[in-house]
Length: 107
Length: 114
Image (cartoon, rainbow over the protein chains, first blue to last red):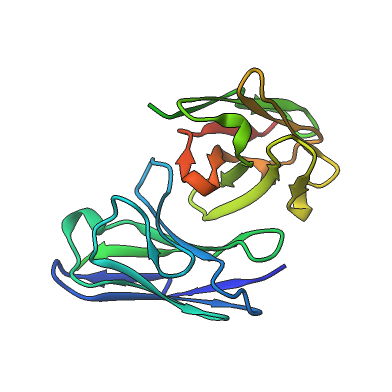
């Protein structure tokens, strides 16, 4: 199975900060990666698909980049509603695998 | 309005069985792969299984192969997860998902405990 290593596992940031989360795949997955946001007690919501395409309705402060084995989710200016846990998901090979998550907390 | 509504979760003893159901509405169910994703308490997300539009292809994560079976009934706009030989490590919230459209259900809790 492809392992997705996400870093950091948690971070503390302030409103207005630029935040970067990284996902590294154990083998190349082209651009077959999505980024998800999950708030407590809620189902996840996709922010980015195909590594860098913004899901409809998602604010433009979210962006994704990368291909192959290294991927990044960037929040350009953190907003109060962005405090949540973020996951990457590769779907290049079966089984699809998630990163372990990054919890973004208020500083 | 798009809805995915899961049901069938509950408390079951180790070795027992449960059948989860997911009823879809608001989109053309028969045109999309359907997926089950689970989340153990306080843990991350885990992809469990998916099924092709016509049911002709099914895929499973290794940890459930031989124990879980995914199926669908397009006439009823429903997808199912038959879970046998349940283990404590299967305890999780199970989500029904249309990945390509990013539609998620609210989840159903499965607890395996004696």
